[in-house]
Amino acid sequence: MNEENESEVVSRSLLLLIRCPATKSKLTNASAELVEQLNQQVNDKTLFDQLGRPVSTPLSGGLVNEDHNLFYPVCNGIVKLVVDDAIKLSDRN
Image (cartoon, rainbow, N blue to C red):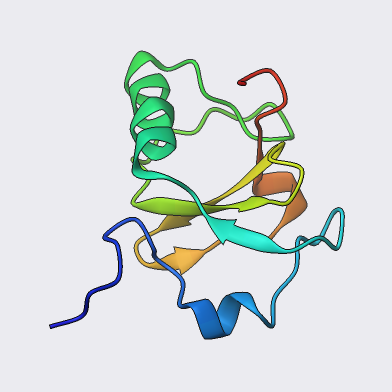
């Protein structure tokens, strides 16, 4: 059985290769707590991407950049590494 944390949706080896498309910084798997908070906002219809589009699909996980201000969602097992699809986190500390 795999001992990786359930919130680790992207393998550590892949994280060594990919970077944030906006800042070029390293990415890490988002904590389960952060994903839960964002999913609450999805349920409340108060979560929006960089273009102001509402996020309506529950998140199964995501990646956060080094500055912890951008969240790249994982939906249906696919990481959306597109700046326009990112969720800004700078107001959540």
